[in-house]
Image (cartoon, rainbow, N blue to C red; front, top):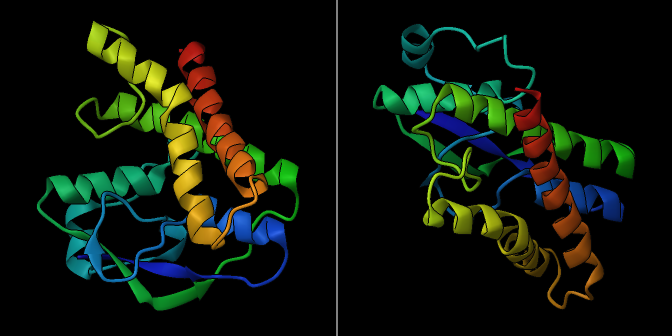
Length: 183
């Protein structure tokens, strides 16, 4: 079992609130998830002995890679909302957008390493279906995710949260495309 501790919602400035909701999942109960952030995770000794070390050749996404390897060995990855961790986010908007751009680059590298891994971004367009998925990954999914997260953030979104979260998602998508073009 791998446990992801939920980030304690910082009730400070708008940037911290946006960073929290853009970066970490928020579920109300314990549940299986695909991955947990390595910054807030705990692993059973048996998992570490079986899976080994993080892949340090990845500049980001080592946690996603590690969790995927654990899942492939039959372990569950759990999100536990009752365990709280205060997470300090990037202190600037530029830093937050850069962080999510780099997450996008790592997304590509980890999925290239594990072609069978889940991904909302197709690595290559090989059919009409993957073309539609690619299109939706730019036009539909970033904005749907932004809408759902902005509704969790405030009871009556004013649109600013939506557009901010949407552009954070797009910066992630741009990072994926940039990394793909490096290879």
